[in-house]
Amino acid sequence: MDAALVTDLVNVRYLSGFTGSNAALLVTVDGRVVFATDGRYVDQAATQCPDVERLVSRQLTEVLVATLEDHKPLRFAVETHSLSVDEHGIVAAQVTSRDGWELSSLEQAVERLREVKDADEIEALRTACDMSTQALAGLLAGELLGRTERALARDLEWRMYELGAEAIAFETIVASGPNSAIPHHEPTDRQVAVGDLLKIDFGARHAGYHADCTRTVLVGSGADWQRDIYAAVAAAQRAGVDACVVDTPVADVDAASRDSLASAGYLEWFTTGLGHGVGLQIHEEPLISKRHPGRLRAHTPLTIEPGIYLPGRGGVRIEDTVVVTATGPEVLTHATRDLLVLD
Image (tube, rainbow, N blue to C red; front, side, top):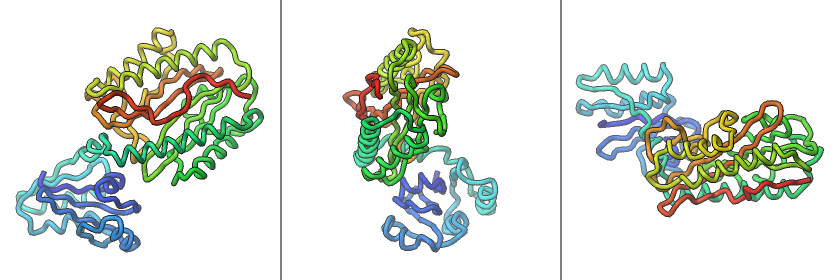
């Protein structure tokens, strides 16, 4: 490609540092970068991306493509997964009106760059994970019995903010008793009771980077079946984490956890994906799946989160944010994976 139009806001941030809500970038093969935003963000853009050419307009794509009007015939790529049909039509009309210009898809080129993180990105993730697990430790040190799922979720979020989080990474999941069998349960006014499995899926965001962690605890005395499924999930999670080695096929990581659950007799009750990349978005590539054709690369952060979900009874999920390194997996979410039995 001779030039590319980047319109996905997360990709714009990754390439330029701009964090506002309306912007686009034009990048050419000879090193030219043109940034466009509207009048609300003139000062912010000057601060966050001072070293690029900047335009101010409400018609972002139109003005950026127009800067190439005197350019020789070129191959021009756009983020077809980001542009609306109408926006794509506008760009296509501009491009096809020029002799020799060719329009194509950039596909997910920037997203592929984002999979592998640099040292600053990993440090931001490490900080987000530290905030998250410190907040969880504070929550679990307090009273759980009789509190509602919704109250526990808000308490945990407040603790993350108090530790310096700029935001929560996603809507916190607190699921108690039979609700813990729902993978993405929304907190309710159900009160935590003796004998409940309590599943907590949460994370803080720091400098734009998202932590992701899940722990399941047992409140009061529990039944043998609860301890059995916890042990099965813990073993599957360890197998998945241990498989996070450079150059390992992504499909083999998925198989490691699933084979462990199959050996324990619980694979049919694992109904979600095993994990995903994490960074400027809570869900990024690579998605951990038997269908993924690639291999793990060094400095790639991802989650490993197997679970067992028994409808109407309860469920367990254990999840860590892990970085693939040259010396093996580095777990960033430092909270015990042993079964905690709490009051």
